[in-house]
Length: 158
Ligand code: PNS
Image 1 (cartoon, rainbow, N blue to C red):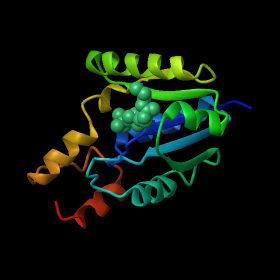
Image 2: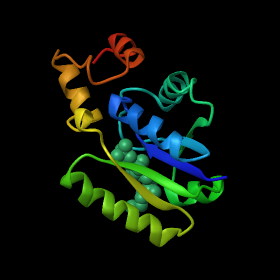
Image 3: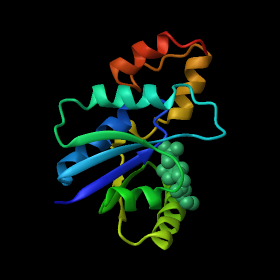
Image 4: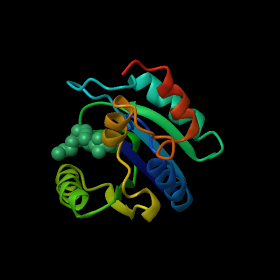
């Protein structure tokens, strides 16, 4: 039984995230989505809200679960006995950051290798930070997020 962890801030969850979740759930026996408790950041959605929304969004995928974590990902991977860490790559800017992250994690704990998935081309322009900025200034983000997130965003005062 191979178990992967897909860590991230997911603030908010994007269509790109959902695509990666579906694809990696197909590749592993178990997929655990790990929502970072962002200490020091002012997230748009609380960690509880993000976990709840991801749980609703993945209810059709029987091998997917959602939890929050804080501290080191390498420690979480150990605690969860995971075999792999999933991360998406959109472009070369991601590559530099993701390579450093993967190598740091490997240095801290060799039990879980990082598996990079190439973001589907139609989602490679989407980022959670971009969505927040566009939304704050009244731009349309409907095509970038799952419908549930779009509706939940309407109730946020940003
Ligand atoms: O969605 P994000 O914000 O790009 O995800 C980043 C995340 C959560 C994968 C990363 O910040 C992380 O793993 N944070 C936990 C602390 C840690 O283990 N850092 C890596 C050592 S450099």
